[in-house]
Length: 261
Image (cartoon, rainbow, N blue to C red):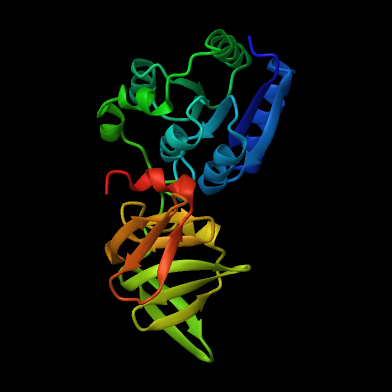
């Protein structure tokens, strides 16, 4: 058994995040929580920075899902054991069991959490990569009904943004990328820039995840606007755009998301 266990927690709902932290404090007093993240991007960075023993990941988060965060862990923190936190039905739970990946169902039951803690401690020293566990899930999860974080609303089609004194209607498909700008977000198209009075984290849950991918804490790119991706000497990705002269930086932990592109 490890002398000192460390973990990160990723859950976008503040009350549920605090509930999980409280439950963990009761069930595992010796566990040190290194980061409590409110979205997938923060969890990706926390995994790369801290390389914890365990990551408790909510599956359904704005932007990057828990599954995508776990995918990056295979590169940035391969010894980390993953526990998915889910409210999904038995179909998805069966898939997790087949893949030998730990999971917790919401609402979290004390006895279930205690059993998970025991399994994690028993597997101490098992260095199987997270990617291997996820591969064992096969296509089962890809066919499961995994809803969007804001499943009640369809993805955005139009945006209302401002450029100086002018208000523009921007077709989302024409956006090359979004860039965080303090409390707001800059919308970049082939024709120029405009300001959206919505924080980038809030915007994440409104976009179609099939077409928009977060590549950095402050950047969301339209996958259809990408001309190519290269890697620099430090392992970071450089995105070339079809309609813009500038390039975009993919922070190193996020590069795993583009492995199959």
